[in-house]
Image 1: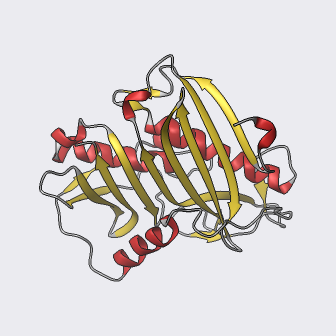
Image 2 (image 1 turned 90 degrees about the vertical axis):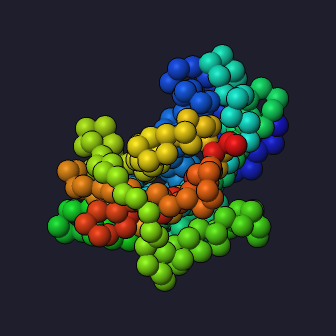
Length: 270
């Protein structure tokens, strides 16, 4: 696809993969979510007509585009290797009056590599400044964005809502717990929040303790619903609940002091 054919608020980039972008089993998930999260923020800045992805409300308080849900589908994990040329097509749309959604299509050479969808809402810290009590907010300015076309999300929006409702309507799943308390100096971002890209890393740590055989397999799907955040030093427990006897697909809840901060569904290549 040629760059000139893109609609407004769509972007295209190419980069040659190296050690920073690649991991042990293909594309580095940590790099992928950090990079696409940054692309999402930059597209929002473009839609607001400002040069930098730094947002404030009308009072001047910092506002952040926090992620509510993420969908990852890795179509061909083996294509991500150092030296390959990665192409990323991204587009940002309005999902509702308060939420935005971005779609990212990745190709390695001439082959499809991955599809990633990010849903965000604007938030700010409350008067206490703690991460357990985050408030919804509105950035200064007017977002010039088209609405998402019906079906463009391929069913992820209702799926994410179902994951959220399914948890809040029932007791927490039963399964073993493991301590995955994040490290303040490596897992938190400049806003002082546990970084969205590091939630799945906590799941990976739990996998290595509870099901190391599954932990060694390449990731092919991940669905994340974010329900909260923690402050640096807060303990976090991961509870892994297999959806199949072989643990190739499982659900993990991340919680602190009885408060669930994420629900994550993971599927590995069989």
